[in-house]
Structures are given as structure tokens and as C-alpha cells.
Amino acid sequence: MRYIIGNDHGGIDLVDSVEEILLDLGQEVEKVGTYNKDSCDYSDFAKKACEKIINNEADFAILICGTGIGMSLSANKVKGIRAACVSDVYSAKMSRAHNNCNVLCIGARVIGSEVAKIIVETFVKTKFEGGRHQRRIEKITEIEENN
Image (cartoon, rainbow, N blue to C red):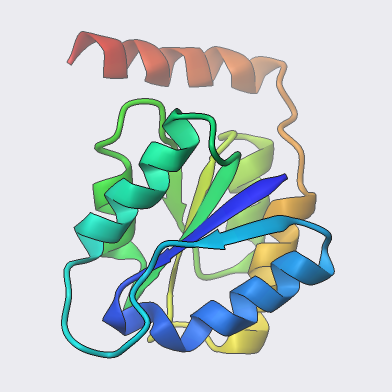
């Protein structure tokens, strides 16, 4: 699978850990975030990463800011994106298994690098269960289409 990592200045401390675990799991990785701690806007990087998914240049994205919240708010404004802000393993699993999320958002000021690695690994290894969950995804898509 092809993964995009997007980050702002608040997320820069987790980028290398996230890239490392993705590569260890055999994923292709492209980074579209900032490379320094100068203040910048998370929405710019969320948009850039999500456009790669929408344009079929990537399958999934991992977005990192200070809390993950700003990235998730921005990502979910892009049609076709289902982003979850996650800080625990169970939520990472459910974001894929039940919600078929294509974007994982995490906060570098909320979780450390080892927890981030476990969350990312769980996200990558969990498959969408379909079934009754597909109906719910279709309803989310309908809301998106009608607004």
C-alpha cells in the first residue's frame, strides 16, 4: 500500500517514527509535511495529503500535528476522506474495521513515538469488516454528497 505522511511543525517529532514503522511493515511512503519547527498551517498539509488519496496517488495517509485534531478537521472536509483522530490502539483498530478510515490523525504532543508506532501498525494491519458497517459508510457518503 502507498502511504502519505503529512505533518505540520507540531507533528514533526513523530514523522521519523511513523515512517520507520510503515517501511518496516513493507509500505510505500511519501512525505508531504514540513521539515522544520517553524510555525505553519496544518490544513495545508492535510489538504496536500488527502488530494493524493483522492487522485489515487496514495491509498492512505497519516497526518500528524500537535493533537491530531486540526488535521482530522481539515482532512474530513475533503470529499471522500474518512479521517479519525486516534490516541489509542482500540480506536485505531475500529477506525479501520468499522469506519473504513483512509486517514489516521495523531498528535505528537499527545502520544509518544512508541505508542504512535503501535497505533500505526494496528491501523495498517486492520482490514475493513464490511457487512453492517458498509451500510453505515454509505450513509456517511450520502451525507457528504448532499451537503
